Amino acid sequence: MTILLDGNQLSLDQAARIIFEGEKVELTEEAWIKVEESRSIVEQSIQEGHVIYGVTTGFGKFSEVLISSQYLEELQLNLIRSHAVGVGEPFDERVSRAMLLLRANALAKGFSGIRKETVQQLLALLNSNIHPIIPSQGSLGASGDLAPLSHLALVLIGEGEAIYQGRKVSGKRALQKAGLSPIKLEAKEGLALINGTQAMAAVGLITYLEAVRLANQADLTAALTIEALRGVVDAYKEGVHAVRPYPEQQEVAKRLRGLLEGSQLVTKQGELRVQDAYSLRCIPQVHGAVRQVLNYVKEKLLIEMNAATDNPLIFAEKGEVISGGNFHGQPIAFAMDFLAIALAELANISERRIERLVNPQLNDLPPFLSSDPGLQSGLMILQYTAASLVSENKTLAHPASVDSIPSSANQEDHVSMGTIAARHAYQVLNNVRRVIAIEAICSAQACDIRGSGRLAPRTNQWFQEIRRVVPKLKQDRVLSKDIEKLAKVMPSLLTEQEEQG
Image (cartoon, rainbow, N blue to C red; front, side, top):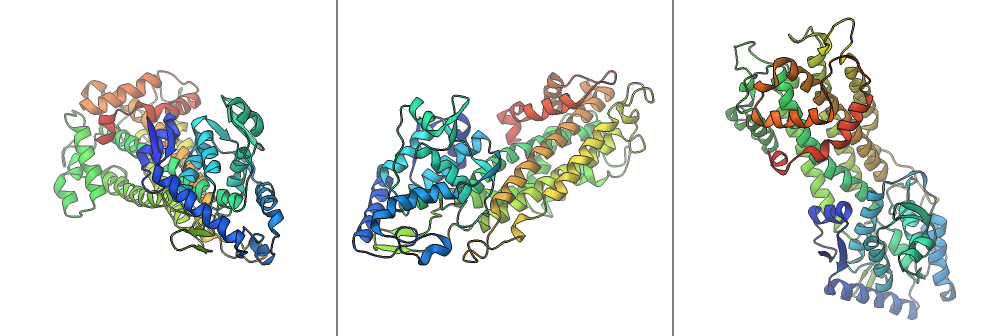
């Protein structure tokens, strides 16, 4: 099935299917018309001798330098080559794929003045699974993601490097192997390809999609921990959360009630204790607040995915070419910083539950869940690893968006650092996934000790999934690979029913 893009209605579900499942894309007929109309305005303006930023002038501080008509194509080629200065490890192929998709969708809006042939080349890369190799560092998050998008654009013209059929090849070779030819950029097109927020939005989109699943996994794992520690379920009663009516808090409490239904391990208020520590009692409040942030991020991503972030913008109906600042990444920078903070907190409370699982002073289980305490350390050091990860998250969660360094001789004197914020959010996500995996290992071990036959039906399903990946600890062994293996496969362990709670 081909997904049609028009620049206005790309959904998260469609984006996920294109990025992760390789579904094909094409523009709607109306979108093609808009693309061609905006292109005609560019060509008409050039013929009439109008001064247009980045078309008949230089870029940034060079915006006052007029460019002769005979050099307009060379100007665009020089732009792509000179701005391809990214460094560091390349983005994951999924990010590269998402960037192709989001840039094509932005161009489909018809405000960029790009040729139909160039948009077709973007779509061809996406549909042929040619993924440009894009260094992850080097963007300031304003004036667009200039460096990352320049590396993407290089492949369109047969330069740069790409991954094709699992191999790293030159951009030219990738096009040849896919039966495509390099294109030649004309006036405005280089600028239209790189003036945008698609690097930060792509990383943000993938981080968000994975974070939603991780939030569900955190709820499931927390429920298992509640049983392992014989938690007091009264704290999750509907009435408690009705009087503080945050929808997301109520949602988590409802999920916990459903997950724990039928458990023989949970307790009522006063049976073993009057109330639990906050890391158990306040799961709905904390996990619910994380979901509030996810909803905020979702709203901002949906807008950004369907936005025109070029400069200048072409308004074909009015025949106007206007320089603006839609390339500034501040909305996504804030959203990504907020997401990193929320995810870090998901790990913070998980690590405290891990401590309660392994610390004999806080439970009635064998010390560190060891089968032979003293001779064998059991799961003692897993809490160390979790503590290290949450501590690292605290540094990564420092907001990138509060920083700004002027560039282009102070012409571009305020920038968002949005791509740094998105990269940090994804790093935090990976750390959090490992922390949740550690909690899952510890809670499963404790439930084995308690008697897994006493688990609620739904948490027992989750327990069995964990056990298929990580065997019960009978004697000390190297657990590093267990943590990594579970963290890697956890997203695939969720069924649709378990996700929806």
